[in-house]
Every structure is written in structure tokens, then in C-alpha cells.
Length: 364
Image (cartoon, rainbow, N blue to C red):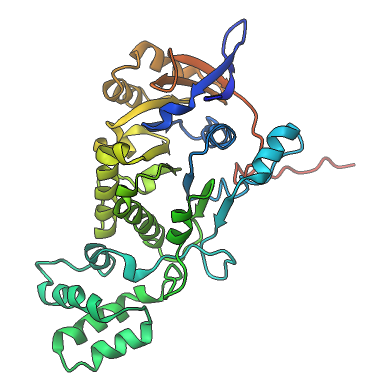
């Protein structure tokens, strides 16, 4: 079977709706405003991909919404529950003290990415950048104290300046670094059924972006292996902004633009989920061939979608303004015709979700 069962049509005579699993070898854009059921519905599709395909998933999860993807609900059918339970699903948490922590190796980053972390420009800070470039040849492992000591005690003014920069920015103290130990990239290379990186618990705001940069950079460096993987980025506007402000954001956006433009032929496919199309870099958005659209009220957003996704009739897109929670329009290469869908139920536990308003109990 090569189809994903995702729900039923929205009409008087509901019929099952299926997506063509083979067409996830294209980039996919998933869009819906807050309260539309976007994250829940995304989980429905990811579950079906796990049930129907052997396509490995890498899920960059900023709100820990998918960390319970390996826990099935009592309402799941036995066959589905047994299938999901047998899958190799790895979950990594961010933040200090996490047992299965999101860790990457600082030394594995490209020089330009290390420089971005250190807020260093190759022209403006040419001398320090040159030291960083050549220090990689002399540092086979990552030990903060030893690295800083070797730079300070070298007798070289520029090396001492680089040590000061590292100390002042305190980036070497981040929880993200594995410090010579294992990296999540080692696990991703094994291609488990799903690798979920919870990116929401880091102390420094740049850490989740550097974590994403590290894994995407690594995937791209191994692209000639042509091992398929679907990179799912929830709340993608956090990582793929059209107007990056920092050097790290610029590096991350450049990498995503490159994957969007060239990744398909190497088996690196993107699945981007966000609230508004204007929050995603246009050079990434324009490369998407599949669209899942939930409720969107803003006419400007719908007009942009119509402009980008020329295969989606604008009259159909405008109907997204009247969608109720859980309703979606699917259009693109993964479905034969544009179809309005009421999304099906989840098979696994959903994390996150809205916080309810505490109500006063009635006086007895």
C-alpha cells in the first residue's frame, strides 16, 4: 500500500481521503493559523507515514509536540499499535539534565558556522577568523578549558583575542555541545524510523538554531549517500525566516534554501509547518510542490499562497477562511485533485496543546 489514510471528505457523503506516500519525495508546505488544529493534523500525517512507508523522519520540534509519537492511544487499532510500537523512534530532549539530550559536536560545524556562532566576520575579523580556520587542524577534540588555555598561552595576540571572544560570549558553555561525546548526527546517520529533536528547552536563544544548523549541515555533507530522509520542521518560521537577523540565522537560512533548491535529487525532502506563508523564506516556499492548508483568515496570506502555488485555484484557497478546526485543503502532487478534508484521529499521544482557562467551581 502506498497511500496514507488521513481523514474523509467534507461533504454530504463523506468518503475516505488518501495521500500518495510516494509523492513525499517533494517538499511540502503545511499552513494554518493558531487554533486551526495544524499541529494535531500534522501528527495524523506523520503517523500514517510511519505506518505506510519506511521513509525516515527527522522532526525538529520547538514545542515538544511530537515527543510522545511512540506512545499509542488506547483507541488505536491493535495492528496499528503493534506496528508503531515496533518502530525505532528516538526522542532527544534539550536543556540541562536531559537524559537523552540534544547534543552536537562543535568541531563538526563548518568554519563559517563556527564563525557565525562566535559573531565573527571573515573580513572584518580577518585575523581571528584565520586563527579559527587553522586551529581546526590542531584540535582533534573539544575541551573548553584546554582550548582556551592553548589560545591564551600561545603568545600570539590574535589567538588571545579569540580566546577572549569565546569567553565573553560564553558559547563554549552551551548545553548543546557534546564535548567530544556522541552527537544526534550519529543517530540520524543510522536512519531510525523517526528522530525527534525537542528544541524548546535550551537556555540561550541561539542554541536551537545552531542545533538545527548542525544537523542540516551534516545531512547536506552526506548528500551523496542518497539515503532518503524527510525533514519535518514544525513552527518553521523560527528556523527559516525571510529576514534573518543574526549570522547564525543567515547560515541556517542559506542551508535551508540550498536543500530546498537541490535536496530532492539527493533524497533530502522538507516538510515545513507554520502559521503564515509570509514567515517563510520565499526561496524555500517556492520549491514546495505539496500544500496542506488549514484555516487561514488573512486575505493577504491567501493571496500569497495563490501566487506561490499556481496549481491551487485561488477560489479554493479562499474557502480556508471558513474552515472549522481540523478541516484542511490538500492540493499538489500527493493528491489527485484538490480535496477538502476533515482530518482523522490521532493514533499516538499528543503533547503540548492549549492551556485551558481555570474556572471557578460552583459553590455547593
